[in-house]
Length: 426
Image (cartoon, rainbow, N blue to C red; front, side, top):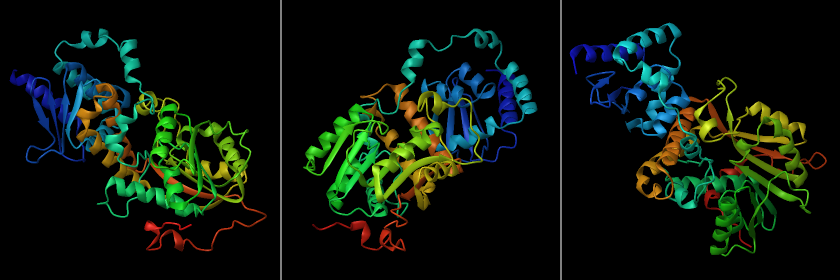
């Protein structure tokens, strides 16, 4: 490679990252040429661009989808801390338009005649796009088990210490929910969107309630039923395939209801119907805990994003104020709000570690593109929680009975020393 080409490349990257203040990183191209933000420091990660097309996307048309698709299909890769790459991407996405024009001018000389290839290059085939679009719960449970851990809980864990294992933190989350609901023996408990049954099993075995879970995933329903039978909990615990909106046939009310990690699928348009259904299913004096992801009022909403295209095609996050307004308008009273944002950032870091450490096992169950979608999604979500663009709130509601919430005056029983090992004796 001539010195002039090397100089052009270096100038292009120097211009692209002018004013960058994030962690030190490096870039390596398909022919071995490399560049770093600081020659004297060890980079936290190295971005690998495997083709001229990947370089063009990186410098000329970067956005969540173009760079995300380059990662999915192996044209862009990351060595080292994948979470740090999102502060780098943020710098690229937010650079001023005049600077973008300078970069394009320098890139045009660097790319050396590849413009026509970019202009007329093949788009993704329908088959490739279909292979890339992977809905969240379509994967076999064997894909989730290695990185979700023993609980199979696919929602924010609760860390009493940053050194807690994922399994311990998930058990603590399940118990925190049960304690916030103040579950009592023989109460009827409903889990809306129960996943693979972790919460209903915990509630039935530790708090001796009659626990009912509902899910829209046939595979989750089958796996949860098998887990319940294996744990000999079938007398107190069950899971069925049902949409929460199809509850007209339920002939009894519930003392306590929870919804954990399902709320994100409801959408703003259906928010009042969601809370109206909960209100109808909950007995007067009953309590409902909603655990779900919300977006910050100040975070930008993108018309097109990687997550919307490849992870949650119909997903739409709402703000906490929209949640509270919708719930109160349907007769539920807000009793407590807790933000677990830092806990979800920690949870996602554990999941990213698990995905990377178990890659060879996971690739026996899903395609490489699907695996890389999940890896990028988890890492990007961890970065978003860290920035505060999104959060996860546990909101406790009651359905007052003629003014009575049937709740104690304080929360002391939630956090007592013995409560984390609490078991109800019957």
